Image 1 (cartoon, rainbow, N blue to C red):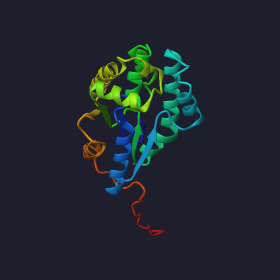
Image 2 (image 1 turned 90 degrees about the vertical axis):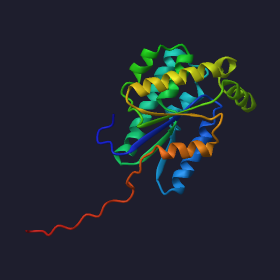
Image 3 (image 1 turned 180 degrees about the vertical axis):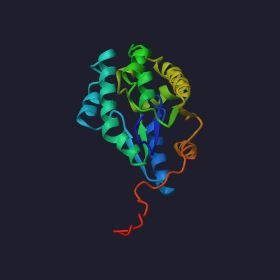
Image 4 (image 1 turned 180 degrees about the horizontal axis):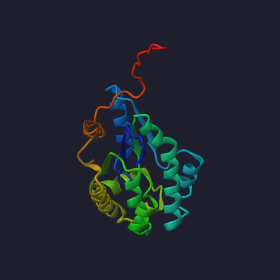
Length: 218
């Protein structure tokens, strides 16, 4: 966990094709409309390391990819997440630890290894897990086109849904507030409102509290 943490950290994860990025954008827009400043970020990041990870995820496999994803996450924490939390900001990440606990397990990496290599990454205050019927997810992936080797497995969507359920149970056991939303029935706007309702009101970190002047020499 971050020392001196006064902000609030939300992660949003779910299977490919579940509408995650659309929901993240809808949440960002809703919070902005409500006057609640939010920092939006994504994994893998757009840094050189994050770009390398994203562009080579089809060639690098197993333990090597799991370590690379963890390295990218630690850079993300150090450069984006921790500074935001220390500043008292609300930060929303499009993918975080739950995605690792699913995608790297699909790649054959043991759960215990993933927990160990990510043990220094701060847990979110709210972990949102988006899910949907596997058939609907498969249809959306097919319409969008195959973009990753995991999409080549026709049973992949069902496995992803099951593993995200396991990830939600693990995080709940660690004391994380977990919100599971079925995007088979929710629109991105509906999901955004449910998530926003679960985020507490925070003081505006960008507005410093006035400091009364202290007379000198008293």
